[in-house]
Structure formats: C-alpha cells, structure tokens
Length: 236
Image 1 (spheres, one colour):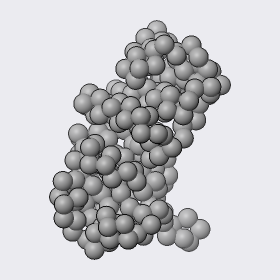
Image 2 (tube, helix red, strand yellow):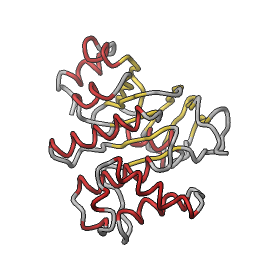
Image 3 (cartoon, one colour):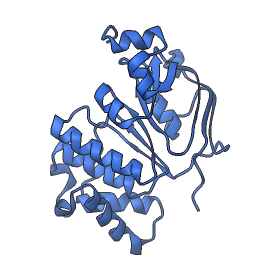
Image 4 (tube, one colour):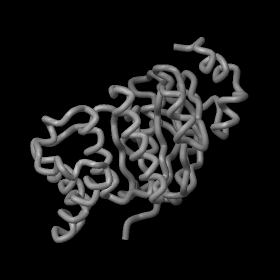
C-alpha cells in the first residue's frame, strides 16, 4: 500500500542554493481534490515550488510533509514542459514507469495500453517515442503519469511549447485526469488555461507566496498589488 499524500503541508519552506534565495518562507497546505494554478512572472519561483512539493528538491529551510510524514510518497507524478522520452516505444515508455513503481509485470502492459488509449495514442503505441511530435510526446508523458494512478499530478508549463490545437488536447487530458480523482497543481503562464482548469490560484512574486485566492475571485479582483500588476501586464 502506497503512503498517503494529503494533507501536503509546507511550513516556512525556503530554497536558497549557493546563498541565492529562490523561494522564501512558503507556508501552504494542499488537500485532496485540489485544482491549483501557480502563477507569477518569470523567475518568481513556480518551478522550484512544484519540485519542492513533489520532493524532487529538498528545502534549505522549513519542512515539507506528506500526510504528516517527511518521507516522500510514491503516489504522485510530475510532468515537465519538455518531457524526457526513453529510446523505446511509446508503450514501453509508459510500461517502464510502471516497472519503476513496482507494478507487477503481468499488469504493466495492460495498464500502459489503457493509459495510451485514454490520451488518444493507442495507434502509436509501437512507434518510437522520440520520433513523435512535441504534442504527442507530452501526451505520452501524461499517459505515463496517469498510468501510475497518482493522488496528485504536478505540471510545469505543460503546454508552453505547443500550438493552440496541441494545447487544447493537453488541457482535455488534464481535465480527464482530475475528473478521475487526481489533484492537479500546475505552473502556467497561460491565464486562460488557469481560468479553465483551476479552482484556486497561488500567485508568487520574487520567491514569495503573495496571494492564494479562488480562481474566479483572482481574475476579477486580485488582492495583492503585485498580482494586479501581473494581470495588467505590468510584470514580465
């Protein structure tokens, strides 16, 4: 049985590699079913915050706890803007993630095939993942994450390098993953995407959490002056 994730709690978390503050004193609690967009200007600390919540990075100050434990659980997944594809088929990429997660061999092919079916890539299961288009590779990465049946999925700019059609396909898959019971935390520069996919916005400014607000309220009447400047296009 996999360790639980929620509540996922950050208490005064900072990340200051080589003395340079990237994230400062972030305190947050995430509950099951969350749909959160991380917004902020370039360099605000969004990617670092995602990696700290995932456990990929260790904080230099403060604590991260998953269901009260400092031990990083396995029931989570992280997808980057440019996913790494192994030198093997799309199906084998998904199956390999299941192998690393300890899924029995008898289940891997079935779960991998089902995940590719859900993202609309069953017809490309045997094709080398590295020759697929950028949008198709991102769908393989989402299938690889979804096959793990994570409690929470972290997404770091998942559509930043895609055209509108490819972005729409990825958004549909993200919505389907969330509807299946997985919490979503997504860093994005796409304000329309945040409106469509998030219930809450966490806004970061210069390495600090400046605001956490319901999404509808954030876009109508952001609380912090930094967030209002960001929405007005006055921050990079």
